[in-house]
Image (cartoon, rainbow, N blue to C red; front, side):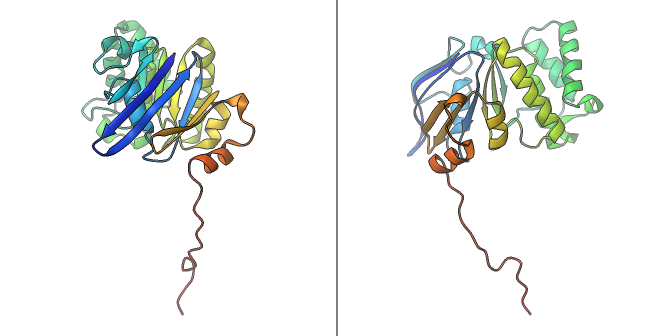
Length: 247
C-alpha cells in the first residue's frame, strides 16, 4: 500500500531523508519513529505529495507520490504537523468543507460529522471558531478532517500529542478497528508505550537514514530498549544544583 525506493530530500548541504526504502502492506499500522529532526515529517510530506523529493520515488495505493496529485489526495487522509486549519472557520465548518472537497454527499457528510464530533468529544465546540479553540480541540478537528473522507491510507503526524487520556484511547481503539478493514495507518509518535500497544510494523529513522524495520512479531525485546540503542540513548545528568538551597 505504501512503497518507497531511495526516497531522498536534500536542503542545501543538509540531507533530511537519505535513500529511504520502505514497503508497507495494506491494513498495517506502521509506526515511524525517531527523534526531533530525524526526517520523519519530511518523509511524510513526500509520501503525501506535499513535498517533492530530490531523488527517488514512492507510491501510495499504487499512485505515484507527486505534488498536486488529485488521485493521491483522494486516497489519503493526513493529520499534518502544522494541522492546516483556518482560524475563521468553526469546527463543524471544517468538516463540512472537507466533505464538499472530497465529493462526499451533504447527508453523508452530516452523518459522519455527527459521529466524529461525538467520538472525539467535540460536540460542545462544534460552533467554536478555531482561533478560540484549545490545542487539543484543534488537533481533534484536524484528525476528524483526515478521517471523514474514508481514506485508504491515513498519515498521522503525532496523533496522540496534546490529547486527554479518554480521546487518546478512543483514537487507539479506532485505529486498531479500521486496520483489519484494509485501512493502512502510517504514524509518527514519541509515545513508545502506545506504539508498542497498537503498531503491527515499526520503523526507526536517525539522521535521515532508516536504522530499524521490523514487524511487531519480530521484536525480541521491549521497543524502548531497541529505540535507546539504535536511535537515541537517554543522557545522564546529575544536576546537583537542582533542589539545593544556598544558606
